[in-house]
Image (cartoon, rainbow, N blue to C red; front, side, top):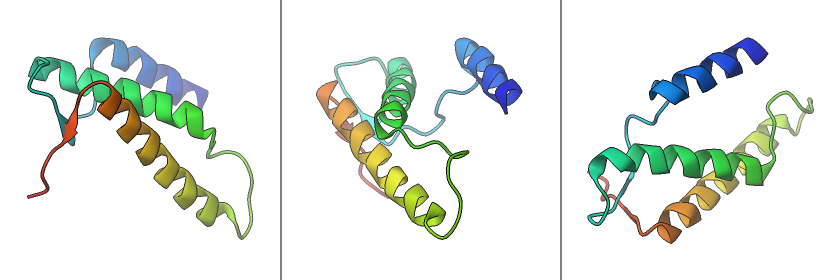
Length: 91
């Protein structure tokens, strides 16, 4: 697990773990910046939610995972909105 995280961090420095599809847009920011901002907001949102996949077990684990996913999406949305982004229209 730690090796995977370290590998991802190393690749992130090179742009390998950046989000490929950014569901947000900001006409005032270069398009090349969008994925970096989205990745930064996702990392911040995950830290705010505090959910760790390796914690807990049992009946409530799936519920906890789903609740954390919703919370992460909400935090990431707030972060992107604060940076001036708007959600892209769903096609």
